[in-house]
Image (cartoon, rainbow, N blue to C red; front, side, top):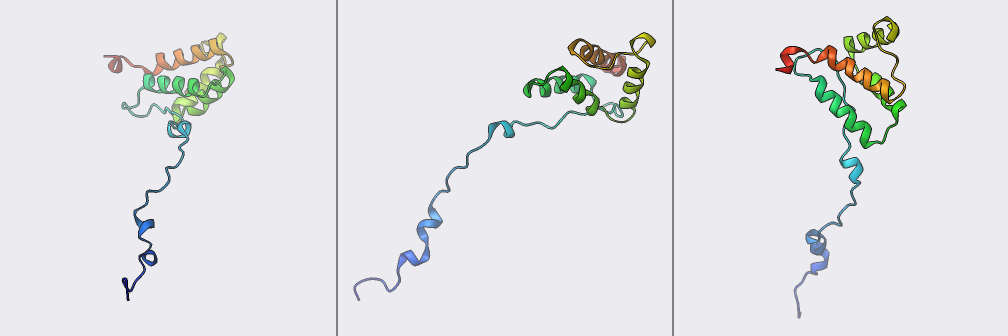
Length: 124
């Protein structure tokens, strides 16, 4: 016998110590954020944070005014959503706001949310 009685290749040692090929990462998916939501139930929820996250989400996905409107209406939850929808139903003539359909009305809707949910104690 001129060598060891075993064959090192049978133990698959090379495969044990090889580094795996790096996986290609999709950077867009890695940076994806969940859709922001706001219900207004707890004091820990900030309408300012919600608005900032909504604008960031909308800008990152290059949404137009119609898509931003749909996102805004879908992102509101609970009594906040009900109050927002009632305000739209009463319309601009009845002291409410028009249904968000373009950038200017989206801005008015966001201003309404800020005025109604950014209370004096939160502002301090």
